[in-house]
Structure formats: structure tokens, C-alpha cells
Amino acid sequence: MKPPSSSSHFFSSLLRNNHLSYFLLILLPFIILVIILYSEEFNCIFGQLDPRISSQQQNSISRNIKKNKKLPFAIGERKEGCDVFNGRWVWDEQRPLYEESECPYIQPQLTCQEHGRPDKDYQHWRWQPHGCSLPSFNATLMLETLRGKKMLFVGDSLNRGQYVSMVCLVHRLIPENAKFMKTDGNFDIFTIKDYNATIEFYWAPFLLESNSDDAVKHRIEERVVRKGSINIHGNYWKGADIIVFNTYLWWMRGPRFHILQGSFDDEEKDIVEVSTEEAYGMAMKSMLRWIKRNMDPKKTRVFFTSMSPTHQKSIEWGGESNKNCYNETKMIEDPNYWGSDSQKSIMQVIAKEFGKSKEPITFLNITQLSSYRKDAHTTIYKKQWTKLTQEQLANPFSYADCVHWCLPGLQDTWNELLFTKLFYP
Image (cartoon, rainbow, N blue to C red):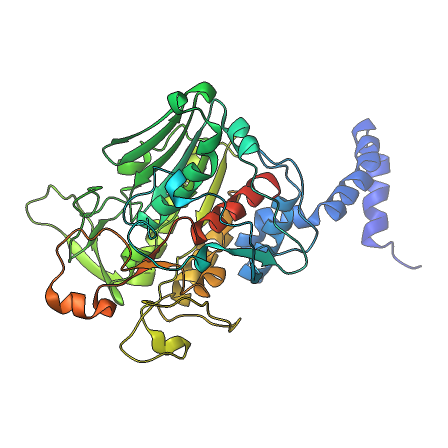
């Protein structure tokens, strides 16, 4: 006689037992169905325990799940398959979105026209994604969304530039007596009284505590960052409804970086030297932990802006050696251009740490589209904080700022992308 199979033996055993067995027999098909239908979600939950699941697969699963969740402030969806960060620059006579003279909040480091820049072409370029278009920036919608809320930019002077751009994009709709700007320590705060709202910037170039945290006096040659210290700044970020983080430029001091393992108050400081990638990864881990503990994904939104490119070496785009972005009025046309100052190893650190995180952070990938814009920097057309020497004046390349951007200009596009991802994620 053929022996019973293990499966038939299992079911016959169930039938011989009490009513609970009948209940389990009925329930079993539903359990199997749930496992089949939601296998991807189980993989996402347990995938990190299984070394056979690659980080790329886990990132893909995570993106798919986040895509199906309704994010706060979203009012619509983008065209399927449209990557808004992949496109080209097109000329637009309707730009700029505001005039430099109309926005009194632009710092003198960014007012290129006021400081004698002779051309305006850099103001007229609009970013056009392949296969779709960015929605027009709607200042009314932005203000109504911010009613009773706080929008906070955290990072370095490049994030401050994006912050000022956002203020310039909305301030014309606000009566003069209903808005004001003030500086308070590490904060710049733009208050919109009728909306009970603020748009704020917080100076923290490393996000963690460092010896460069003074918002005014921070030009320190030997930069040191304290490990595990994000709450020193993070306690001031609590209560924000929308946060835009950035950090990159200040880490770029070579292949190695100094990390303080104790306190800045210690007489003998325990400072170790690690690779810049390891140090940056430490900051990303701390930021992600802070977000998890302090931001409610059902009510708030978090953005992270990728590295802002510099244009210090004209030889990289076919120019002469020992020159930079000074006097450049045309953008780079090579779609594959990537400057050496934008370190791909740092992008890989971001991808790795963000890929492991379950937090719904929106990544504003402005690096490639900004890399083309060697024409948009402030160069020599800005306030100089120290008196220039005769040697410098004779050679503008020696003091041209190829890091920061004129306003209005490129950073308005960053905010158009922020607007798109906020409302049409």
C-alpha cells in the first residue's frame, strides 16, 4: 500500500482534532493568500536580515512602497516615469521669476547686478525635464500651504541661498507691514504675520556640532566635527513642518577629516582622523536617526539637497588651465559633464545610507543639472568682505567665487524642483 504523503497526513490530523482544527483549516488558505499578495512588503521588512537580497533590490522595494503612500502636502502626481532631474536648459524670455531689485532680502554676496555684472543671460534659462514639464511655481499655493506652519532650511551658505530664493519667490504677495526678516543666532527668520508662518534658515554646515558653527565667524582652517552631536543643533529644528537639509561643501578639505570623539570643552581633545567618506557617512546616519525620532511622516516632509557643484577648473570643460568660472557667460553643453569637485564617492555614501532608511525623505538631485551652469556663479560680482590687493585686482580669476550663485538665477530652479516634489511627488 502506498504510504500517505506528509501533506495528507497533516490535513487528516487536523480533521481528527477539535473545532479549533476546523477553524485553522478554513483559515490556512487565507494565510497563504496574504503571504502571496504581500510578499514584497515582507521582503522589505525582513530583507535586511537576508544577505542574499542586494542593497539595490532593497532600495527598489523601498521606493515602490513609498511611492504608494500619500505624502503630506501632496495634491497630485507627476507623469509616470518622468525624472524631473533629467533634462536640459531652454531659453525663456519670461524669466527671471523676480528681479534682483524687487527682493530686498538677497544678501550682498549674491546681488550680481548690483555689483556690476554686465550680462543677464544667466537669468533666462529654464529647466526642462525630458518627457514632461515642471509645474509653474505658484506662490499663492505655497503661502496657503505654509499657513500656521514652519519651513526650515538647514545647512551651509548654499542652502541659505536656496532659502533666500524661496523668500524672494513668495514675498511679493505679502503686504509690506505683514512681513519681516530677522537674524537670531544661527537663525535667519522670515515671518509672514497674516499666515502665522515662517520660512527659516539655520546655519549648521556639517549638521553635527563643529568648530565652524558660528554663523558669522566660521572661517577656520582646521575643521573638526564632533561625533554623535546632532542634537546640539537638532533641538532647534523641532517643530518644523517642512525641512530642507544640505551638507557637502564644508566636508571637502581633502581625503581625510578630523572627528572629535569627546567634547569641545575637554582640555585634552580626543581627535581621530578618518576618511572623508566615513566622516560624511557618520553625519548621514545621525541625520537619519534624528529624522526618525523627531519628524512625523504623516504630517511633515523632509528634503535633502544634493551637492552643489563648483567650477574652479576651466580645463575640465575645455577651457584654459589656471582659469575658472570668471567671465563665463555660456553653460556647458556636454550632457555627460561632471566636474571633479563633485565627488561621486559622496553620492555613493548618500545612496547607501538613504537606501537603508525607511524614512520618506525626498532627494533633490540638483548636482547634474547645476553642473552645466558655469555661467551662473557670482564670480567677482559680489560684496568683498576683505579689501582686495592690487595683485588680486589685476587677476580676477584669483578671487572669483565659483561656489555661490547669483540671485535671481539657478537656485530658483532648485526651488521649482522643491515645489514640484512637495506638491506632485
